[in-house]
Amino acid sequence: MFSDLAVTWAARTEESRGRTSPEELLAAAHAACYAMALSHELAQKGQFADSLQIQAQCAFAERLGGGFAVSTMELAVVGTAPGLDRASFQEAARQAERDCPISNAIRGNVEIRLRAELAG
Image (cartoon, rainbow, N blue to C red; front, side):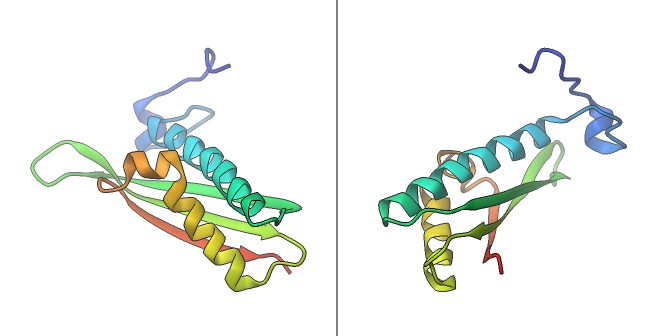
């Protein structure tokens, strides 16, 4: 439950000190949504990952002419998927990014960068 989650300007522009920002919440939502999309994509291909470690980080920047915006979102996934080669994993990762609802919500406004690697 997010009722006790402190969302502050200071967490956005200074040190977080246990607080968060809307951008961190967006990144967390994107990572969770992408994990589900990638798991689904792999399952559709009859493949299953033993583990998927996903990190999402967004950049918050001042806009020309005033205001602020999320300018980029970087998704990084490291997966363990027995029987899956690097190229197949990366293609599944790219397709999952195209299918991810959060990616689709921000695409066009935010540059999405994806890095996908198999562990080991």
